[in-house]
Image (tube, rainbow, N blue to C red; front, top):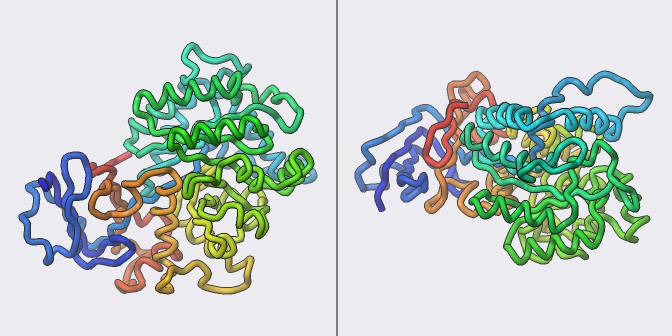
Length: 436
């Protein structure tokens, strides 16, 4: 196995284990061909060698849920404009920005958001993309015009992208799309599939994303789940972010959103479906999602007053957890990891909630921010710095004031519970150092 580059550091995390003086040999395609403690690998190092010195190298963080264009409203929704501000009043302000963006604007704000992600050690993003057409709903000459802008932004920044193409068809049961929702909507589900397949034909990694059960009816849900199964694609959807969504779903279908998605085929393949938020869910919903993933977005869920996710209950039911930056008010999966744990402590009034089989809190939070996110996006070769995977890495500066004098055995815990993304000093995607 020919190595084009060798990467070294004081400490690294491989397969969830802390390795002292690790070495990664990486081939010309950015894939890891050898890994282990430096003194245990006897093959010569590659001519190109990068030693990060007093640093901890961890897998690059995987952002499983982003709306990049919402980066444009950062800070603009924090003045009280209604007697009762909530998710729905925030959505009105978000729609105003969504209708104003042209293709170049979509590219510019997406590049800004993706660049910030990269600086925060995020090496892969699942972009839940629903700005498709012109503001009045008419397609551009190329119906994928705005999707290509997202793809271009990711390529120019150097972040790995899974484009979660959204299907949106209505404002709710029996209701036509609102004027501000028209640009989200394809003519029908077949036009949506045509767009998706045109993207896939050029090598874009795509997942299917029925926006929510509020925005997509039963027949379209069945068709999308079937298309995902036939083509071995992952699927993501907003699920039970608000109690009102549950009430409307029960009124229309006689069941909760999670159970409707299960009934329509989204949970048939283990590990293929990700429910985003899942705040207003119960034990029956958790059972319906067994073997799947819930993407938690703690900053956004707090910002919008959604509530707290029952994280330990989901895990006990066999549901994996991943993380997303969602509205991109904050882009920092280290902070999201901490907020996931702290939210669960507030909900349960207990400490040290989300641990792995060895009782490690930091190890489990790191897995949630890396391996689980990669799994939710269908990325088999990301999320861990092991042989056969991409060398996608975040380099953590041990000399940063947040981590000064933290011992080796406490370092991963300190990173995920006491730090922020400012401790990230370098980012590598596919063996290439990236500077956004």
